[in-house]
Length: 93
Image (cartoon, helix red, strand yellow):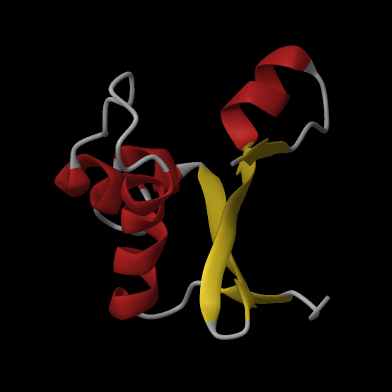
């Protein structure tokens, strides 16, 4: 089995691939309800969404043989941590 390469999403093209991945993954699933592209793009783009005023998100893509096979977003929500007196992080797949 070939290895998986994980890369930071840094470009507009990678961000588009990150957002589009579930559409390919769940193609043909009658129960799949896609999120709006523009809402996802804005949420994941610093300066486009108020979430970024207090928190950070880093998206990653997983590749095997140059094909996207997965995605994940690492999230640090400062407001959550201050309110809960915690140091939590979140992962979204």
